[in-house]
Image (spheres, rainbow, N blue to C red):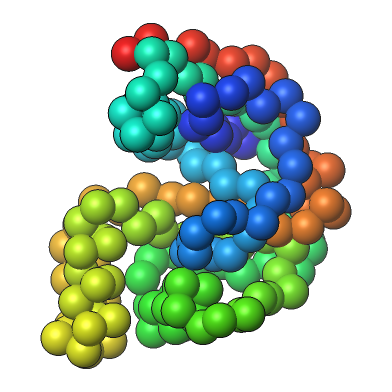
Amino acid sequence: MKVYHGSLEIVAMPEIRKPSRTLDYGSGFYTTTDFYQAREWVIRRAGIQKSSEGYVNVYEIDIDMLRSLNTLWFESPTEEWVDFVYENRNVPGFTHNYDFVYGPVANDKVYAAFALYEAGILDKQALIRELKTYKLVDQLLLHTPEALRNLKFNEVVKIEL
């Protein structure tokens, strides 16, 4: 399966990094099966960093091999997905032991809806109903070195801004 990682750098040798901010699925190396999602991330990051270019790094991954590891898989937003994302974002020191996590990405609309949930304005069921009305793209987190070994760098697509 082909997956993408948007960055301001060419990332031929991905590594597990602890993020400087809280992320949906915790620390690790994030990819997506959607080229345009990775490209949008590059554009957003380049705007913040005042950069004139970025890259969509393209990889191959053996999804069957990953699924044989300690995997958490969300096809769509569920109560379990909400709880997992909430814990990763809001519980100090929270970590998990999954090698690989797959599920919906929290884009701007999802962030806004999730913020309403975090503020207690939406309950969990209302949040899930809201999210199911959106066209969601995916994210794949490689959380451990064992999972990362399944990722093979193919090429890079330069994004000029």
